[in-house]
Amino acid sequence: MRKCAMMVLMAVLLGILCGCAAKPADPESHAVVVGFSQLGAESSWRIANTKSVEAAAREYGFGLMTENANQKQEKQIDAIRSFIAYQVDVIVFSPIVETGWDNVLNEAKQADIPVILVDRMIASENADALYTAYIGADFYAEGCRAGEYLIRKADHDHLEHVRIAEISGTPDSTPMRDRQRGFLDTIQGDSRFEVIDSISGDFLRSKGEECMTFLLGKYGRDGIDAVYSHNDSMTLGALSVLERNGIEPARDILLITVDGEKEAVDALKAGKINCVVQCTPDLGDEVMQLVQDLKAGKEIPRVTHPKEGAFSDLDDLTDPSVEGF
Ligand code: GYE
Image 1 (cartoon, protein in one colour):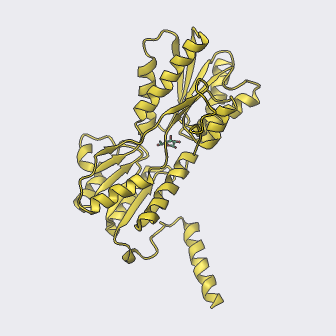
Image 2 (cartoon, helix red, strand yellow):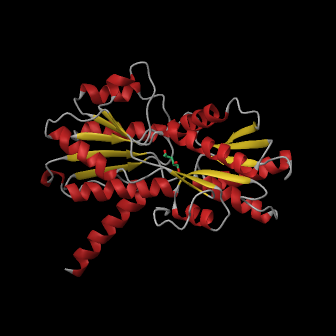
Image 3 (cartoon, helix red, strand yellow):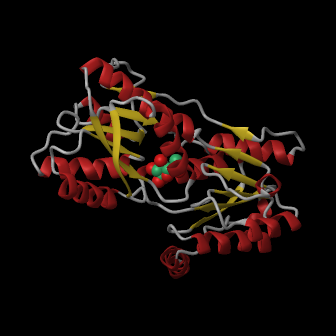
């Protein structure tokens, strides 16, 4: 008996080590099986998002096959193909970049498997025909909130010239594109602001450090007034570089970030970040509600955006609603 239990444990561990898909224990026992292609584990946001989807699937009693692509588009394409072969009921998919999905999504369509895009969008001439619904943040609005904060801050502190360095997310991804567009559209035409550089940190903390080191080397500590970073992981990396160089974050160089993870909100409260634009990773419940409605033959909304806001040093940070995930 003990030997048997050991063998089961070994098999489970082997599965984990191989990085095999987390197949539902007994798919037959679930009325609905969902295939979830997650793009990676690059940030606290992503890890919280994966947990949210997994917890919601359990709550709804759906079988969930999760595949994590470790930042590789080809792996996501393979995962979707495996879901099609398995004939899952619904594919839930968070595309790492916007382009390059036409073939595989056409295959899902031909197999009659609906696709729900979660978090990120796809771009294609034929995009509308390739997915059933999208649920995720309005990244353009997030970029606007970052820009609006900077305008308020410049007004408040009577800043006349703000040289901004942007640390952007993964190139060709929806949050990178739209956070940039929203920000630039908001500050454009205001002569106080000058974007001096924009470099990609791929949404990774380690690359946020590298980017900040590079920017300081290129412009010097007195050549940058503000950093707009597309996520908290990169911001926290950049912040540590500033501190190591004796530069006071949020004072010597303004820091504006997006996501709202606990560590960033705590840094805001500690006066080390100026503004945190919220982006919620808790999309699981709404995704599974869409799956349920879809299976029940109900009409589902084509686009769902969660409600989000922003916290900053110009707000009351003692308000209990100011908290991170
Ligand atoms: O901001 C970042 C993550 O797509 C909204 O991806 C998501 C972004 C999030 O890696 O932290």
